[in-house]
Length: 247
Ligand code: HEC
Image (cartoon, rainbow, N blue to C red; front, side, top):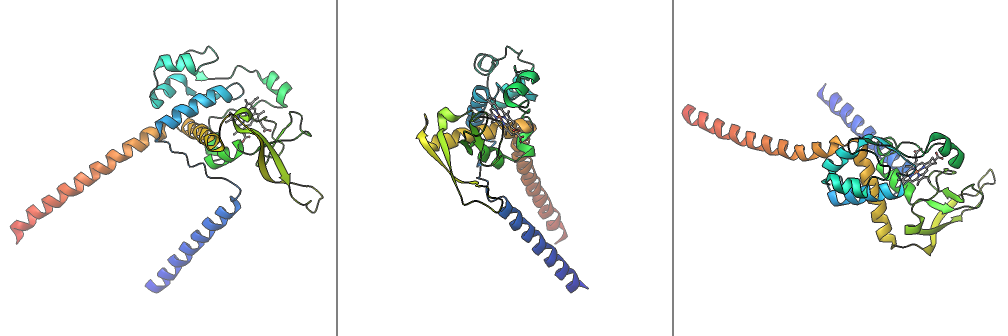
């Protein structure tokens, strides 16, 4: 009976391992964001970049300026002077000035709210997406994206990244050629390493925005572990105390 159970457990473990590896294989095209929610400086830079380069088109309607300030260690003045471009009040959510009609007219659709994007798509996807834009004259705005083909978003960070072109592979069965490799043909304002860092910071900020409570939970977790360690130690001392009487 026990042998049967062990065999069953081993099979289950193997199946889990197998599904994990096949999942990893299908996600092979994604680059690792490597972002860190406990890095407050990164979150602050990410908020700054987001407000400058993304908030003109995308709202974060579940996040309030005031909440962002207290979570990211910023003062009301810093947020209102540097990170609020719509004249919203400190206690308001991060809405976008663009109307739905404008969005549809300019991009064919309203740019989506990004509050939950890092949870829906995952951080590695967001990171890779922001690095996958390339010039494509056949698209209305002149931009395409290797990860999200025919996305209607132009590269908001082209000045930093520089202009990226695609090198195409052989035609597939349907006679279509897909981008195989992306190369920056005219450099941007920052080095590729600095660009990666900016994209990592933005991704970090969007992961935070998807679940602001995660920051508190992480720092709380440390205290919980310390508390449990202390409790175990006390229990151990208590046990010794009892057993000296028994012996
Ligand atoms: C000029 C307007 C504009 C700017 C600026 C802009 N975006 Fe977009 N974005 C769009 C549009 C339009 C779409 C919809 C693309 C589609 O579905 O074809 C989009 C889609 C996205 C998506 C994919 C959403 C999905 O459907 O999964 C992400 C992620 C995203 N944007 C992130 C950003 C980030 C981060 C920035 C700032 C660095 C940014 N965007 C700046 C217009 C913009």
